[in-house]
Image (tube, rainbow over all chains, first blue to last red):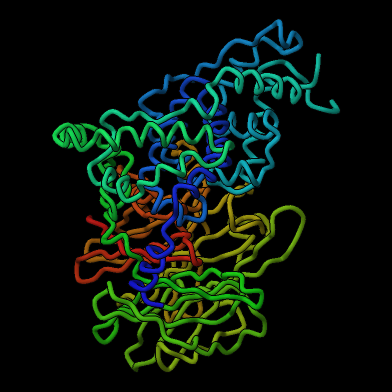
Length: 166
Length: 405
């Protein structure tokens, strides 16, 4: 099939709005949590909103991608630059709801790299699999694992928590 | 105190609760859509779908507001036109490359229409991915060989102008490989006697726990014609290191350059046998070897280029390397640890390399695909053509780019 024919095939298989609604239910929810993990609730929500808007505007093209969620994650990541504060700030722990959570956890999480924080919150916090996290972040499962390992070591060191088995 | 993982889970739940629900994350609708995008909205004007499905209620908020904006648009075209110029993030027109941010990069996409699309299916009708090989100019035409995952075959693709490509069917015959392996022509050289020489990556999945473990070898191939048959030497043309050598794991991505003084090879070496894909705590670096005949090689003991931990896309690692010669020196294209984004570096002598300060110069912001796999660069008489294989809908599609150096 030539390039033009290939392109025509894409046009003939133009996605519908219903496709996008289906995508948002799953992919949008994943984007929201991925951005929350990266930037916290406020900036994460803004990034999600921007990414979903961009996704709708360009859905014809994005829907043909193997990993539209991963692509829109990149879009939201770019757009989040205008909202981001450095360093990342995360809300304090609600002591009433979770009194057993170390109060220093938000600051410790914020001190990690974006990728380490995302990998840890997505996989340990939201119980995503390594593959699921990797698909959104655009990296392999083993990379996610590596970020988790490094990030958890930093967290344990920062919070004075001993490694398992030690 | 509960374990750290449980604390993270509880805190993540708090973060999730503090963020607005998905349904509230509606896009802004006042002046953030370009005229072309609104035209798309007109073509999509199917309000009924907004009402379909209670499960889509959250999404309906998004589209509902978009539809309202669309209905108001006709009364205020001027306003739409004015707003499209103020927000570079949304000024993309249909059929053009999405550019969420304005980037300082020397790379531009020639066309959003892929120049090579190839679908190959296995016995279960599952699409198999192909990879673009090196591109060589011979007889006034551009040539490359497309390798197919686990196929062991090569498809010859040819173009007279670098933009309109045709893929030859059936795949060319490949001799010397007794099993189906991943095969990629990383260097193609037309020889003075009319024959062709190629340096091929041959990859094999070694299995293993967790990530598949790949090992790679560089083999020499020869052919009477670019269309084959290609005969692959069963022995690697250059061996990986041993013991604690920096390239003791595997070698791949051989870029071979024929000069008046002899042959030079730049290659990617790995200290560990590990997955080719992301993530192993692995160190891949670029090595250099020389030869008088292109067959027997002498490696320099130390690598000439390594990833930088301080550069985010590199993350202390290098992958997918290609080196080309130009009149003014050498240019290297390379990926970092995650394998997609590309940077470029320059060298006058092949030993000392200087990164382009615009790195990464190629990302998925330049290529309308979710991922970038292999790339191929060629100097077309001073015009740098760069081809990027992006993950697509029917396997991989190859896009043509320009590198304006």
